Each structure stands twice: as C-alpha cells, then as structure tokens.
Length: 162
Ligand code: RP5
Image (cartoon, rainbow, N blue to C red; front, top):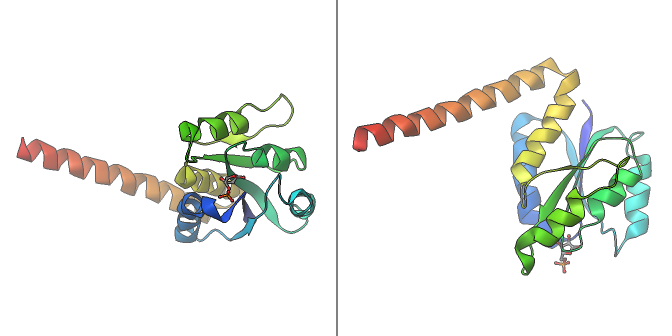
C-alpha cells in the first residue's frame, strides 16, 4: 500500500496533525510524519517532495498556520495529490492560513480542508490511497456507516427525551 506523507510547518501544528494520524492509524494506512517549514527549512521540504513518489508515497498532507505556503510549495514540487490543512494561530482565527492554502493559481492544485481539519485530511488521504485497495475501501465504507449509526442513535435518544 502507498504511504501518506505528512509535513507540518511546526511542532505547534501537531494537535491538528494528530487528528489525521489517528484516522490513518485506525484504518491501517501507513504514514510518515515530518516537521519541515516552507520558510525555515525550504531545502528539507524540497528534498522530501522531490523523492516522495520514488519513496512510496501516494499522497502528501501539508499542515501549516499563519502565512501558510507549505502546501503550495509541496504541490509545486510534485504531481502527487496534496492535501492542505490551514492551522489556526493566535491571530486572525486561521483565516490567514486558509486563504494562503486555498488560493492556489491554476496548474498547481491543493485540496484544502477546513481550518484545523485534520480528521478530514486523514480521511481524504485514505480515500485517495483506497482507489487501488478494496480492503481499505471497505473499511472507509464501514466507518461511514458506523458514523451514520451514531447520529441515528442520537436522533432516537433526543426524540425519546423531548
Ligand atoms: C507556521 O507558523 C507553522 O505551521 C505554525 O502553524 C506557525 C507558527 O509556528 P511556531 O512559531 O509555533 O513554530 O509556519
């Protein structure tokens, strides 16, 4: 199975990234995590991305806050699919990172999830890997059904109490 590469701009982004790694761990999808910054360690970002396909990665998640150029820089260096997670910082409520991540120019796509949307980044990465894996597809479908069952259980509970 192809691996998911996960890069975060700072270890302060870890709580958001952890939501993605929890999903991937639960689904049995292999991943590798790094702290590389588009601004502070551009060479390491470049080296990782340039070798990613040959190193067995099928998709890359890039999480960053503030002037979040990481996902865009990663996408510029590969035609592997790139998922961007804009991370909320102490100012601007993550709008800075959201716009920096989502507003990519035509030709260099980044699939941007919600601000702090680590769980959906993990799920989307798994869905991409699952394109070539029926077992993983079945796990994703089972999770969807289990999540729906939880909502229906809450519906029944609310209906019985009100
Ligand atoms: C970004 O700046 C990082 O992705 C992080 O979200 C933000 C703050 O970084 P630290 O100052 O916490 O290292 O590059």
